[in-house]
Image 1 (tube, one colour):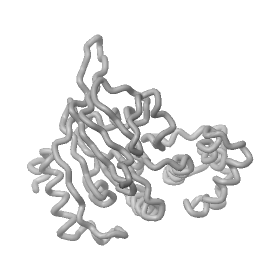
Image 2 (cartoon, rainbow, N blue to C red; image 1 turned 45 degrees about the vertical axis):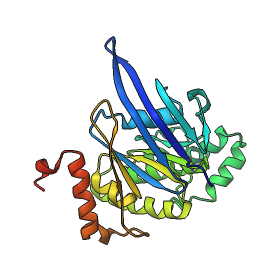
Image 3 (cartoon, rainbow, N blue to C red; image 1 turned 180 degrees about the horizontal axis):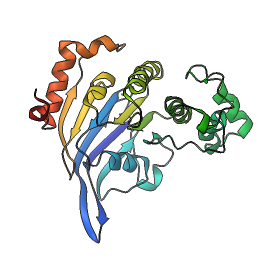
Length: 260
């Protein structure tokens, strides 16, 4: 039986702020299966991004265990075990789009020439053909995000983590890239954990949505999304979509605020 790509058991984490020790996450249990798209939602400060930092090895938990691909890993063993795209694209301004995308392969030991060749082979697939030599300042926000996503995917890990990848985009670009991401994922089929503040985005993209409470963050609800794939924009007005949205808003305590 194939193990989960991610298995978090009874995880808690603290951090220091103004000389005080604060509890960020408490007794978190999350399991992600191969090829499953999971979204994390919750109020600001609920520990969503902290959880991704813990999974990637950038931050250490204080209690619990974390396994990737069936192997329990300590924080020092986690860097490189997953692919991680943070909210900002973090493109290097002195490298062109091709060189930025190739960076993930260079980090994993490929020569710069081979890394560029492998990255270039996927530029058309990511809607970037013709922009290989463009620098980040010459690209739109949406195209910068595509370069960052290609760089993340090229690391070729079973678990892909996305921290609000479209949070800085306007509504039209955001909708277009959501559609693009879901098509790409349906082709790639990696396990995904994505943080978002947008309930509609979570329902549109995910197989399952996990709701974290206010700090200290703990899992208060899991919603299995019963929408067929491939996902289309027409689904956002479907009764099933709206029902999932209402349940998640209720779990977040937002139904009265939005007048539902």
